[in-house]
Image (cartoon, rainbow, N blue to C red; front, side):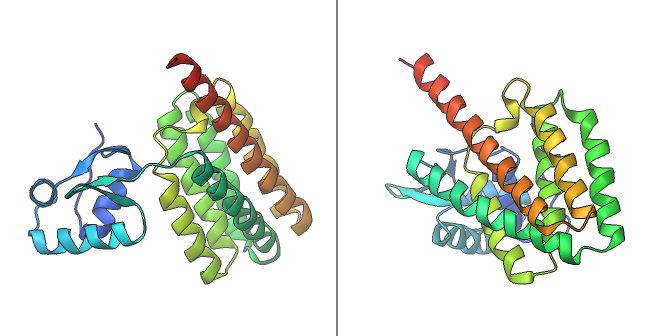
Length: 217
């Protein structure tokens, strides 16, 4: 199981990261005393962090307990619609404002992440880093803030679309195309490529969910 190292992180960041890496999954109950022991801190900052996460709808009430929230079909669809538009805008702005060094980092990320295609969990973490790098390359702090919230909510999905057979390699090819458009300073092409990337990821997840429903019948 993945471990979280407290190193100078606050309770909110630690709990959020634990959800993001799958230590706590949708439906899991979060208990103040257990979290305080895990992260080596008092219950007061834990309680405040839980309240903040509940306000952001990342946690929900189950009686008197707080559990990690889950997304139904409609919520997932709404999230992907917003993500597609915001990610597309980030790619457009990155093509216009990214420094040469930022583009070089994106290119290197794609090359390094190609080695992770056989490991969906590791590739999912790398995928998030790649997208966050595009967000930063947009040089728009308000867009970065909104995308950060979207990506935190994505952690409420119990599985990654990159686990679908063949999806990892295809996604990496899509990443390469996005970077090529950004490097060419083609804002329209970069936006189109990233929007298509998100649409394909959404369709892959819909197929995953359909298969899961079929198996559970």
